[in-house]
Length: 396
Image 1 (cartoon, rainbow, N blue to C red):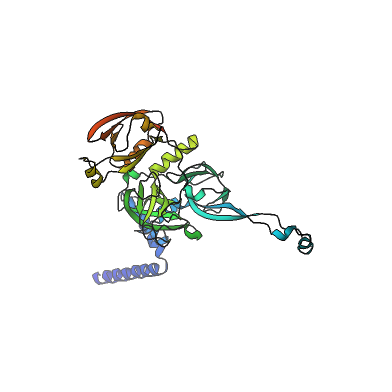
Image 2 (cartoon, rainbow, N blue to C red; image 1 turned 90 degrees about the vertical axis):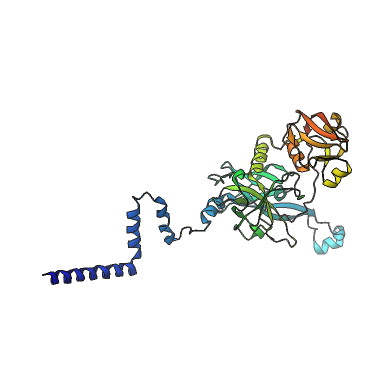
């Protein structure tokens, strides 16, 4: 009896294993379904996300989700400028010339086209891009990833941060999520999205190489994110996003000897872009404070030559005649160490501190004059628009 029982058991096990082998070979997804059904009631919900990777979703270590989240909001920008008129042929007015060759062609302008990138930041149609992408453009066309195109108008631009705001009128626009630059750290993974060399939308990956980069001579107000994510001509105005697809910055410049990426790219932080965008949308421009001085960094050599013990501050090299600083009594040779109780470490800190003040406000400035401290009251003026200039770096 016992022998017959073990024989039946062995046969049953053999049949079950044979069925399992056939299913595992021909229909493996049936086993996967069963596994999901068992785990669906489990408190370890994260394990459910591993199974769909068989069907082609983002694998571990992939940034596909971040790219798919941000890419629809990044657009291609095509601009055109009317070139110089063709000069007429001097023989065109000759009667015999006109008899044989007909009337001369009317003068016409040759269009000059360029391209860049932009980021949709609002479903209402507002787009952030670089000032140098749209500067002087007669026509601007925006192309979305879904194939739609629209003509854009410039709401306003700010050459001193190299930012511009465009507006298009389309329905169901995908807007990017703004990230928090204060939570960003050196070493964080970032993606650069844009249209390099006009080949089409492209995503590159790297890390945050540095934060708060300044003294580069790119813009007047500099506080760049530096990244080694490949940024090339055509990426200007595109998005730098974090590993979740949130906007961290607007790609604006590269450092290159050849015109291609060398792993040193710069993006304008989203905090600066948001501030400039809101000011442009509400007033049409960006208003900044101004006192009318030409500052210079206080180097150890300069401090020694002036007999100064202080290592921080901004040396006033020149004062605009009749400007706010001149009226307040600021003199060339003064070392400005504090503005409105904010310590000034260098010229960048001075420019940023003054720019944030409202024109008409009265503030106290502390200076060191001939080795002695002094306090002056200055009425902030409105910063005049900057002169047009060429940017020194290879900025797409």
